[in-house]
Amino acid sequence: MTYRTISVNKIAGALGAEISGVDLARSNLDDEVIGEIRQALIDNCVIFFRNQNLTPDQHLAFGRRFGELQIHDFVEGMEDNEEILEVRKEADEMRNFGGGWHSDVSYLEKPALGSVLYARDVPAYGGDTMFANQYLAYETLSDGMKDMLGRMRAMHSARKSYGLYSLRATQNVKSAMNIRFTEEAHGEVDHPVVRTHVESGRKCLYVHGGFTTRFQDMTEEESAPLLDYLYSHAVRPEFTCRFRWEKGSIAFWDNRCVQHNAINDYHGQRRVMHRVTIEGERPV
Ligand code: SIN
Image (tube, rainbow, N blue to C red; front, side, top):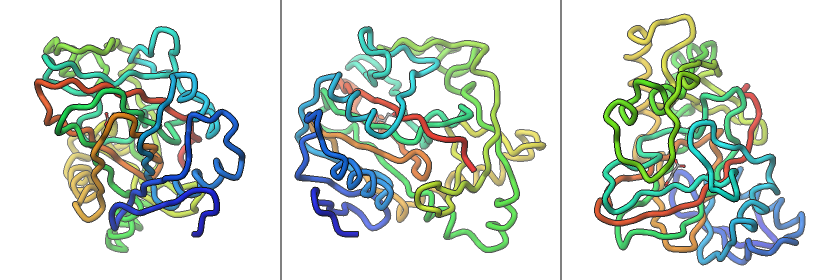
């Protein structure tokens, strides 16, 4: 793919590209630029921008160019902008938000299309985010496994993170973020184990350790061996890239075909990011 209005440079073999030549604070970015950014996202699964200077309103405006924004069901958004999730870990906290491989809000009937994460305050070292390409995860399975998984559905739930018996809730883990632990998080929705990306037309694996609980019509115990295999297969090093944050960096990932993992290796330092989350469609 050639681009006319932006420069796109891949950062790894599996996925990820850095985009330059665009100031995202501009409210009047023309449709051609937005179209090329969208194409770069589809082509690379996650895209990165450096040295951006966005107000919360500009961040929201950029996100809205790609769809409706979601309000998180269990984590309170910012006071004046509830569609912005402040992903914050203070120097005296041990647990981070988004640690562990996952795809955002897959416990919803319509999970997120994408997330746009903007770095406001970053640690001197550590706090990188990793991404894994779920097209490659699917394509590298055997034909027999692809065939079987292609006929299966899996259940997703928010209960491990936001349920009444989640680790954070029961161990009373200190958090700068205002998280609601509730019975509402205990519900389940089902999605195909192999989903077809509506824009690329390609198939990818859509189960992950964050919110997938079991295969449909099976118990958690019955599902665990195969799910555990898929979780580790899905994030093989050669399917990943790793992003080193700087203040003003942005990562925009496609939750439909990417898992990500916020690495919690910066205890004693503060990290503050703002996330807007773009609504997607029901996975097919
Ligand atoms: C998230 O999962 O949205 C957080 C990712 C990060 O903080 O790097």
